[in-house]
Structures are given as C-alpha cells and as structure tokens.
Image 1 (cartoon, helix red, strand yellow):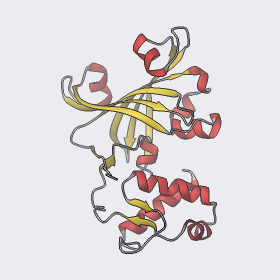
Image 2 (tube, one colour; image 1 turned 60 degrees about the horizontal axis):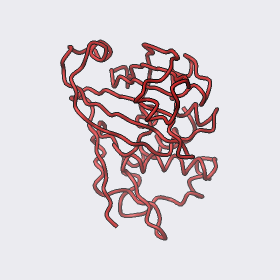
Image 3 (cartoon, helix red, strand yellow; image 1 turned 90 degrees about the horizontal axis):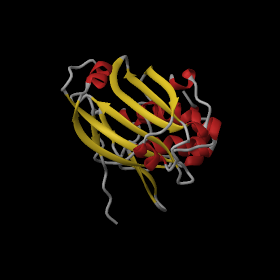
Image 4 (cartoon, rainbow, N blue to C red; image 1 turned 45 degrees about the vertical axis):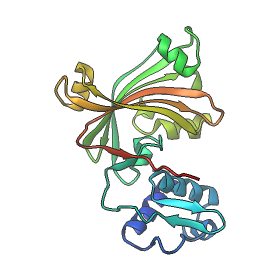
Length: 236
C-alpha cells in the first residue's frame, strides 16, 4: 500500500470516529504533511481519495470540509464519478486479484474506436476477478494497448493504475462510463459464482490519461446485492 493510501485510511478512520466534524475545516495541508512526515503532494493525493469518496469538499479561501450528508455507516456506497479502481476505492480493505486470462491480440473494431488505435496495434486482453476482504467483488474484462507499458502477471495482482502511474508516467485523469444492467453469460457467471442469466450491474469504461489519450476500455460486472454507487451533483 502506498503512503498516500495509508494516510487516506487514517484520515477516513478519524472522520468515521468523529475526530473531524463538518463544523470545522480539516487541518491545512502543510499541517497534515508535518503530522504524517510527508510532502504536500502526498497529502493532496490522500485528500483526493477522500473527495472522490464524497467525504470532503473544498471551499476556496475557507479550507476543506467534511460533507454533512456523509453517512459513515454505509461502507458499500461507492462514488460512480470516481473511476479509480478497486485498490483505491477500497483502500482500507484487503484487495486481491485472480487473473483468469492474460494475453495479447489485435483489437476488435469497437476497441480500435474506443482506444483510438489502428487494426494492427496489439492490445492486452485481461480478465480478472477482484476480491474485497476475501469476498467476490467484481469481474473485469480489460483491453489496453501493449504500447503503453510492459505488463506481466505480477502487475495484475495489484493495481494496474498505480503501476502505470509509477512506471509509465500514465495517470488516470478521467473516464467515460456507461452503466447498465445485464444478464450474466457463462463466462461472467463462472467468474462471479452465480447462475447463467442472473442479473449483474455493468460499468463500461474508457479511461483517459493526463494527456487526454484513451488507454483502457473495460467492462466491470458487479453483483446487484453487494455493490451500490452514488454520484454527487454540484450546481454552480
């Protein structure tokens, strides 16, 4: 686990336990950096995770505050507008991955369109089951251009996003997500340990780097009775 994830976990625990309340701003970033003996950049990354969770918001000139509507008891409510991957969305939990398929091939036509690549540019095809605290959480089918980085089985055991950021300079900066319900086919059913035809929640995503380049097209399947998502809407 990276240092910013540990700090995120500690801050979230402090919020859960009422050490920080919505009535007062969080300590300034400089003060938090001194407390955790780290840089402001690391603190900013930890605060970004809290913001993506919908726990905090920034008020220019006044500081960073906890949302009054935050329900600390709801651990399964996840932010739909924060495409950060299971490792970061569940930074306080034990995350494991089981790779079902990992290969390279030429892209299909829809993948070429989503990723902005040509028919002769190979892609990784990755199928993983993600576990949160030893429970099946999701089944991911991911396609990425092989040109972005060298990826191996070891990488797939952890966070691909963190690996790309640390080793290829590729940072997830945005995504286009489509959410819909679907019946599980044989592959999905076997991965999630459900029956063929059972209902699943699907998030289809194209992820974009800091340069605006698409680098991932994925389908993530979730069990309808174990995952809930929300989205905050701010009107200026």
